[in-house]
Length: 500
Image 1 (cartoon, rainbow, N blue to C red):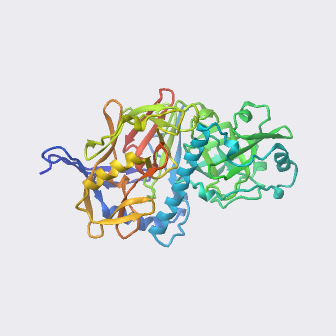
Image 2 (image 1 turned 180 degrees about the vertical axis):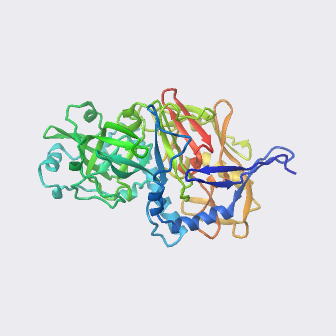
Image 3 (image 1 turned 120 degrees about the vertical axis):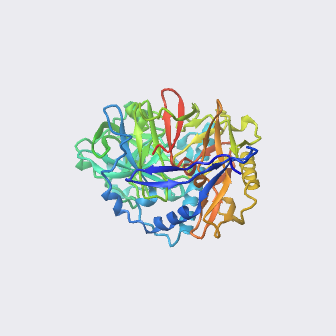
């Protein structure tokens, strides 16, 4: 008989609550903890997301969380999952899942490639032949229709899973930007352009903004770019991604507006991209939240910021919070580490993982950050599925499989090698999974964050995957429903369940 059990309700952002029963059950011997997965609720979301009408979002633009209100020292940005912005074109949830996993694999490959090159002393400009200054001059002096470049479709980089609504220019033009903690340069598509991919909003027109201004070649912002050039005394930028795709254009300052026009930030350095073929389909560009000097948090000099990622199959929304109040007082905290060889990413001091309340038998060194090799653990908003070093993943999977021997196996699916046929069930009890941090702290994940549906026929898979690298990545599937905060001033990462 179980000693104890509990349930809770998660209050989502759009004025309704969803009850998630996540009972933690301790058997009499106290050795193995389990939690309950609501299969029916998960499957219903797979059906709802395919029929969701993105126009509903426009009717809810004024809704923001009362817990995260704007002030002079802090402000919020509303956050939506990708599939509530774009009308689904997938025939079923299985094809949607395959598309997501394809984007996710490309994202991880891109991150690993960047770090591999950085460790070898190869600059980002070596990811593809650099557009030399003469070619940048061509961009500036010739008709924009003549812009050319060997661009690989950005779909292979991944188009981002969470979007924010940001006003660009003055007067502000609303644009959906991808949230990305793995990038340092914020950019938007700009007219005129030769290769502008499809986006939800009209392409930003610089001539319509009174606050648009070019950055001079000698400015520190221009010098801080990984790839830059000078033409007509104006700075040009290029951002290259690990798969060879890139965005190129003018590096400028602009006014950005947040929180339904309640907060305006002036003279933010951003890229005005004239050639962005295939990148970030649906969004107008990217809101860079990395740790580098050009990232948005660095430019506005906030001491902390946080975000909460709601279920990506949910139509609800949450917020990104900037300012000193971004980290809740009761957050589960861990050390925020930095890699001097590649300062963009946020590394967390992870000490272990437990399954069913039992820590995996792993050497502590598997999570250590070595600045001379791709290693450690990063928290990334753009990666969906948590990636672990192969030996760590194998130990985690084997422990979970041992605790789910009563569930019928369904083989593998795409990058998942452990799946279950739960078609005959409405709920199941599965072992708990928790991240362990120094000082005896732990973050227990809800079952729906690691046992996820891959179709609407109740096939569920264990949502972790191995990586060929020594680097581990905590992805957004495992972050869902938890406010993740980065206290930059105090070098602390915080995790606050049920704080959306």
